[in-house]
Length: 370
Image 1: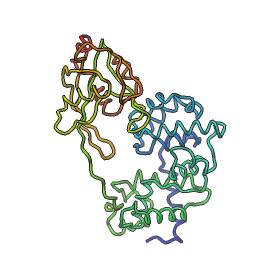
Image 2: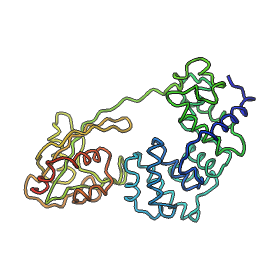
Image 3: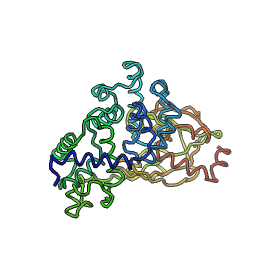
Image 4: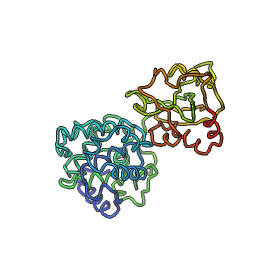
């Protein structure tokens, strides 16, 4: 097993590997703090390839901190749509306003000031301080945890407190002063490209230092934390049509998908059919009496520890009724065309439904006759 007096050798081998093998990523072109910050927030819970496309679209629309601070939340949510974990973009919005108000629109360099911004924890603060400003601070992500769990053969769940503390102390001891930008990125790049979930040990520059490789068990590290159980939920929602328009409403500014537009709906209760649930939900949320014209499809969607089966229906008013709802579960509403629906931010499950409806031959005549 590698000893502390070999840490500098390992660091140099890693830096040499990174210089030759690092990916060409847009925020690496100049390491501008704003671009590094946005990339770090976007890449949380997001695959690199997907993140790059979103990053480039974001930068085209919002090239600097001031443009983020001045943007409407709906604009930011639309740019973020599909990335999930939307608290990230809301915190980014809050942080941009703070940077403008308290730092003159210039991203702060001091670690404590970076760490104090909304949505920035220890990892992100370390990443920005080291990558944007080359400060001698560490940043530990899942890639780094995986690399060190293999090098040191950590045989208990890597997320346990004592294991995380060991990794933090060891990375700090290895960090070559003045080279934090390259070293931290090199560790994460190695974990992403070589020491990945399926390890490619033959390509690894640190193979000779790796205890798990020596023991022939790299596939058994890291030891995972026991997973939480998956909760299955049946929900019902409806596409209410009236005079050629579709009803949508905006969710409150708290809870899941806060501030998103949505189709009304909710969980199917015990002993209730989905067809009954969608009628009940519309009455409870809007006081609209609705009737089912047809079933559209069933959408299956997963997020965090939930697996949702969403039953979707075409709806019209069951009787002559005002098009103005009484809102019990939303902050505002709109009647919109299909084209206008493409411009609002919807939860992923509803977006899947909308994608299906682009080719559903039943929609056009139903809208015309509503």
